[in-house]
Image (cartoon, rainbow, N blue to C red):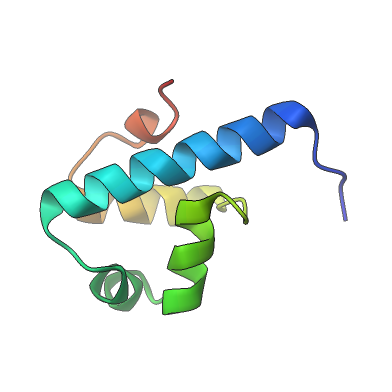
Length: 76
């Protein structure tokens, strides 16, 4: 398991905030997003709190479902 650097923690937390904002703007609940992505509700909660890094494949799935460019989840 790799060690988290301060930069990776910042990116993960920022991505989680942008994920939550995009999900809410789309009018989706965490449970519905979990269902659409094949994730668990707990996993979505962890992503949004910045507690877990997201695999690139999952990031692209989320962006597609939320109808946003994947890069928007990285923007500061």
